[in-house]
Length: 166
Image (cartoon, rainbow, N blue to C red; front, side, top):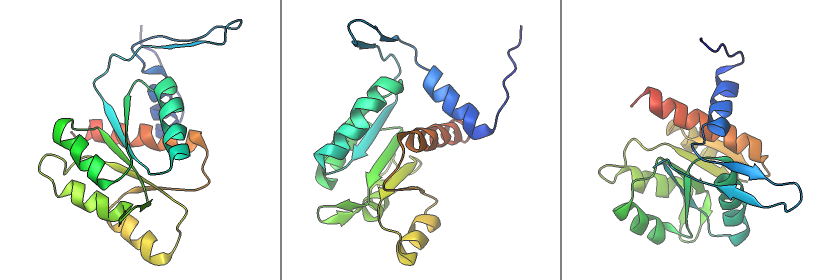
């Protein structure tokens, strides 16, 4: 039996992201406890120096997606991480200590083996210069403040595009 699904490509990618878990996600009414089991090898590298933003990405992403979430607080930690593990997606904060997210993206993409890893840039900056740099690199830009659903949809689109163009 073939299952028919209706909706835009983005909606279907988002649905695939949320339902693509190979594990268990349960919210027990009485205990309000979460159980999450990840069996996929995909890893998201979040580079953000603000502890609140780190938590904003790690907790819901760990619960709502089947991916492993790793956090780097700065470019040094990001480069240390990618020496050992090749992430599936970079989620980069624009304002980082000593470097901006676009420069970090350029440096990561100049690293052999990381050239084709997509990135999502999170920022509150909306100048024409920054917008031009984002567009020229074909980055997905999410402006602050943002809705978590927008980030999850962007993530689903990036991973869907990567799978189609692998």
